[in-house]
Image (tube, rainbow, N blue to C red; front, side):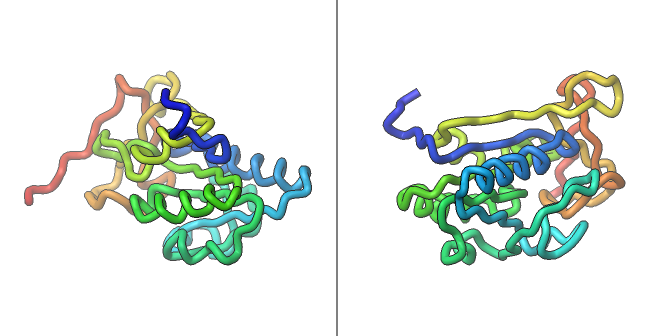
Length: 186
């Protein structure tokens, strides 16, 4: 890897749904607070599954968070450390604001699903992973065979690329058991 393009202040946490990405992100926020850093958690406004102004895991753990439509909307509130959940909801629009944060010395940790239900890489992971100083890819448990999960399989009939969903909409599967969604005709 070309170390000139790697940023030790950027960490990417990725994997399928139900793997513990938000829990891992919350751990990074707790570590930042313990180190005396001014830390903030950020989430997309449209993620209203468990609350508007909190990061919440599927198991009910929660911490305060700033809900924004765009990462750029959070720049004025971020100082030493920012943890951004569901980064794939922001797509490529997240890259430039994250680069701006890194340029001013802010530590940035992002988390989200890196592969969509079609089996394709979600933006902005294609841009952020090569820039990251650390990448943590978390596996859950396959809902079919119990192997480590690598994919989020859509089990609801909705074909949009991104939906705010949970247990009734997705389950985690391994690469062998994964059944990608079929794209609707154009």
